[in-house]
Structures are given as structure tokens and as C-alpha cells.
Image (tube, rainbow, N blue to C red; front, side):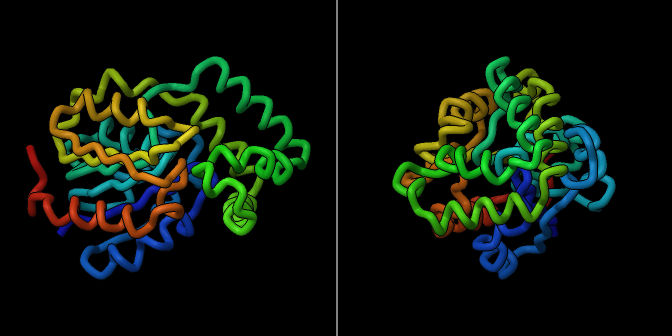
Length: 238
């Protein structure tokens, strides 16, 4: 049996998958990885992930977790039985985004993490959800639970990541790519770019979702993942 490993996004934890875990655990062996909280770079995280889990792995990553899945596949394609990349990109940060992250890190170091998070929370959600105070509070609480030091470290890891687009053509395992129709952080064009580079990829656009599609459209995400997992071959593809 494959092990399904859920990979949270930047400064997120198992709560990002709280609506998926019960549905997936009813049919599959599932765990949530925390290697992104214990290592400094995406390649180091990928090596730890592969070392800590035996057998063929099904990697389901959201945002930074999707970047981590790509790095794990690059490091050991034979260990990855399948990947689901949600709300993510294969591109490196642009100079503009690097500056934004760098400026945010200065604020985090100054103890103003919550202020920055609340000011930018709208970008994580679909416009219909961005004004929902409970949703914003939930998101901010999750990140603050991880803490400012992790927020800084994980931003730096993302800033230093490689351009993964040259390696997309090497993906031979089953690949699901999903993106919210109003994702402002990793727009739909990024998902389409990944899917276009991997001819057998399954691309799904989740209506009514922004970047946090596991929270915004949990039933739709659960159905997509369960249907995709059901179709996976019992043995990893060569």
C-alpha cells in the first residue's frame, strides 16, 4: 500500500488538512509531514522526507508543500508513486516577490508578524471569503501557532528555491494539479504551466476558492483527491 503524505504550505501545520484527513484516512494510510519545520532548505526537507518514510510515496502538497513535493521527486523519482500539487508553482520567486518577502521578514523580526499577516490575509482567500473575519482569524492563528521564527525560516527557504520548470518533463508518475479559480498567490497560469509540461497531468480548477482551497472548498478537494487516489495503479509506474 502506498503511503499518502500531506505536505502543508508555508507556516502551516496539520490544520491545513483538517477537512481532508478524516476522508482520506477512511481509505488510505495517511500522515502529515512536518519536515518543513525542521530543515532550512527545500532540498534538505526533501531528503528528510524521503529518509523518514519507506516505500513508494504519494505526495500531496499545498503551496510550499507542492514545491517540496517537486524537490522530492527531483531527488528520487523512483520513490514517488504519484503527486498532487495544489495551489503551487514550479517557478522561482520574481525579483519583486523576493523584495516583498524580504521586507516582510524585517517586519516579522521586529515582532509585527500578526499585523503583516492580517494586512495581507485577503490575498490568501477567494474575494467572497476575504472579508470573513472568522476565516481570517483561523488563518492568522494557524501561522502564529507556528511562530515568527518559522515564518521567517520558511520564507527564506522559498526565496532560495530552484526553478523547477526544467525538471517538469521528467515527471512520469500520475500527477494531479489543482488550483482555485481566484488564487492570487499562485495564479491559475502557474498550474496550467505545470500541467502543460506533463502531458499525462490531470488539471482541476476549483471554483469558489483562492489560495487556501483545502479550507475554502473542502468537499470538492476531498472528492478530487479520493477519485484521483482510487485511480492510482497498485504499483508505482516505472
